[in-house]
Image: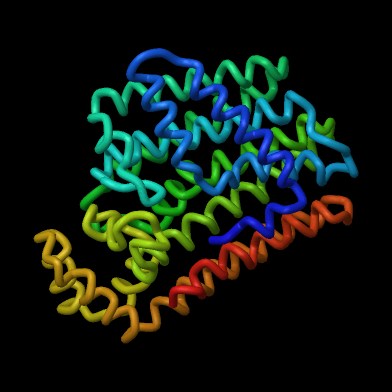
Length: 328
């Protein structure tokens, strides 16, 4: 997803966030310093900092972001980075952002500790904002993130997982941090509770939307565009929405054959699943749900004043869906 032109209105803000991230990651000694420098090279999409900054500006036509806004944005990105390090260890994922994952580069022990180190740096950034409400919002998001991860681990290999559990995992693993980003931005802007709640709901739906597109791209994108190997979720035996639709549409014999290949880690499982996706129109079924979450997120923005920043937030919704269209 090319965000360079889309980020243009907040280019200077994100450049400041990047400078502060590099500075924070460079303030270490020994092997941690090496990991910090390595992480600085793994530049992600910076969606969470962008959301926080734009949520702040959407409440009114504010000028440049304050130090507190930048500190909170950096904190959220550090937490996201930490969660990815631990995710890659759990998933045995060897690549992240087209580079070897941290555990693959430095070993699992150092990767685990470096993830905790990033959480500590994030706490320090949040403390500098002087806003206990931000600490509370982000702490709740991290708690939900961990709960969602534990639920996912518990149900790994459970190809009979139910849809409500899957949706809860989406809300907690991905939606919670997006929600916190939007809430923190409005909190820093001095918005009322009603608008902060609307922003949080927008962030939650956006996070779910982001994960749904990721789940679909796991079957349709390439190594180059994903920055990791396609089919990773499938061979980890994790249920995702496309699989729910497939198993709800195919025959029992077809499902049994697919499940046997997945459990056996058969390399043909991926092509078999893709073949049946076409047969049962799984792509369109999944895109219909993605469109539904786009609409839910858009409705939340009706509580915001009409300005260029709100238009930017609306624009995120079709952009996320377009990531999938580009590879279908």
